[in-house]
Picture 1 (cartoon, rainbow, N blue to C red):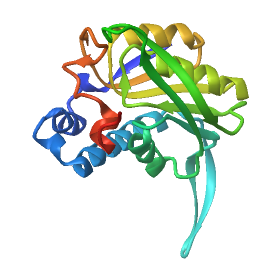
Picture 2 (cartoon, rainbow, N blue to C red):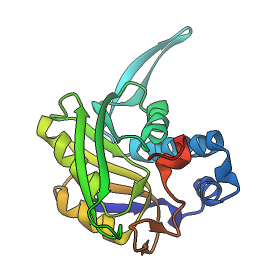
Picture 3 (cartoon, rainbow, N blue to C red):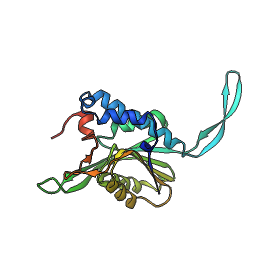
Picture 4 (cartoon, rainbow, N blue to C red):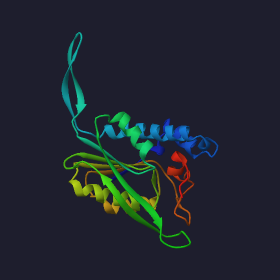
Length: 219
């Protein structure tokens, strides 16, 4: 299994990350969502380099030529609701992909809000048998939601390859997801890896609650 931290190299991705972390920038939800989409587009491009390619003939108005094109059947799955703009960024690149959606959310299990459980309520997915499965969720904090989402989607078949994509991860979350994934043909992609979480299981320094920043606060 491989973990890729894209922030270790200088790119425009770091600009997008700096803006979504900025408390002033966060006041504009549309700008926040747009940068989450753009991070998805950059990450989708990086993942596209891992696909299987074969030469295909393309006919132009003036002739024809062979171009290396991907042959993988891709399924992009997302964790509702925070993952929606991230998912959209991936679809801008993988525009022929099938789609899957999982409602997996964390719930505090004690009064002090320091212990977290995960509840999976809804799933809509095609078969992932023999396909390249990409699961996207901006935050990989405890890792519980992502692990539960993968386990739910894996019930529809065995993927050819698995890519987990997040904007920000923690070492603890990465460890949990690694334990849930198969050893081979699985990669975790992070735009950044932050040191850890606070007592309420929010990533620090992170950028806050992705769902709330995208769509407004919930009860």
